[in-house]
Length: 186
Image 1 (cartoon, rainbow, N blue to C red):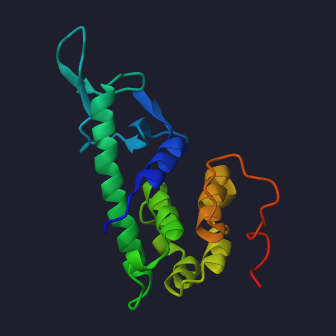
Image 2: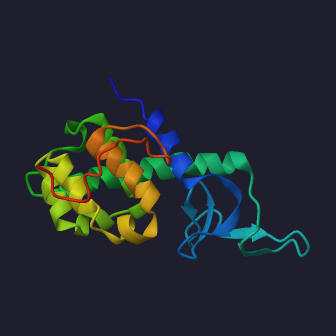
Image 3: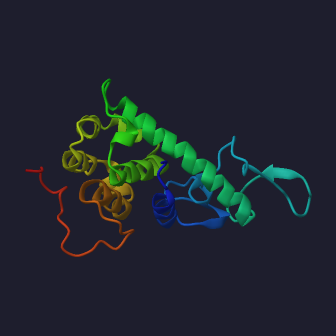
């Protein structure tokens, strides 16, 4: 029976937020909906100008219908789930298949792929320990990344807590959780 991805979809949506108007994200990239980057190939790249009735490039503040944005989120989610699977296949030549990882690990990998794309493939130690199903070590090495240390630390902690500790919170970290990233696992 195929698994239900409802939890991870909502979890990503909570992390990304939802906006029906275009905005510049933390890296200055034009974004809309649930973390959808507006690129030249995006269906939101151009919008009909209200005054001139001509197509123009989308700018921050331009609005789009919520239904269209949520359909795009479904597409983006499926696309990033495939990236997460490919990240697992690339871990090593004899890596475990994506579906062989526990659900909490799959959730964390999908969330990472949604935010980071293929970047985790370059984290050699993370990928090595992921392929060996040593999730505490994988989390420890992922915490040694710019993503964890500088870019989105709260989200990174939430994702790595799901990977390592099987937690299900979004942003407010429960008291008493072990800071596994501060020293190597035993």
